[in-house]
Image (cartoon, rainbow, N blue to C red):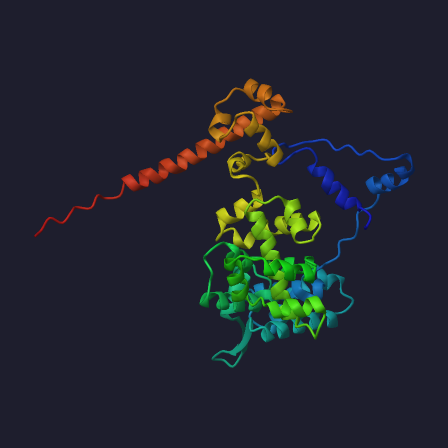
Length: 382
């Protein structure tokens, strides 16, 4: 495990004790005597050097940067793209101009090969850069360049046969491809799980390309493995894990079921629920995933700073809704809810009241808009 750096530590203590609702908090560090020198170095040491990661990850960041430059029409020629890259931190830290030119040419070539960018000649004979429809969808949808074509193929396949018997197929389609690399399956166990799937889940597996033949080959380590086919199977089993979590099964039970440690299950859930590109489409769906709590606790967890533990204490104390909290006395909260301080009670009560007022005003505005509509005159003609 890498040692904690000064910048990381200062970021951690900057959040300490605030729970998302306070402007200040305390951070207390307890160390053994033998570690005092390390701690002094951690607290008083210099900040780490800021290094550009634009061309890191095999140039993925640079490809996304160039696609956005062309997509929002800041750049329409190779020279303009080069000039834009030359103004970045990456260029300032590069040893020579040839490295910047190489990064520019490589990114444009890769974007063209992925059919995200094309070169066209205008009436004056000048070559201009334009994004394709797929490229437009990629940068406007905040989709990584490297997975845009794969995602498009998956969606085209789903258009022909989308299973709506349950949420599994939908979860599969919106499972980020980056999660697949963090999942190390026990193929023998995955084969056994596949044999026990329900008819609905098997139908989804068949629709996305999961086959018993591939699972048997991976179990026996026979033949050469197609990376694309393996990623489909990995992604399907990640979707199965997320589907179990969506159905409110405990994290540790899901981890045991798929022979994964709990950290993997928690990481999958956190990264999936924080995928911002899907919030606009699947707002309520993502919200349930991010809470991952019993349905009766979801309303209480709308309060900032109230996690599943605090929500459970409130529920057990008889506070089942935001209305009950908003119109209760501070003394009732402190007396009935374990470990609740007066400052916390005041904060929660005020926040609940604010949320209720916002919701009521939104409903009132919606009702006024409906009332303002002209009443249609019924047609009484014979």
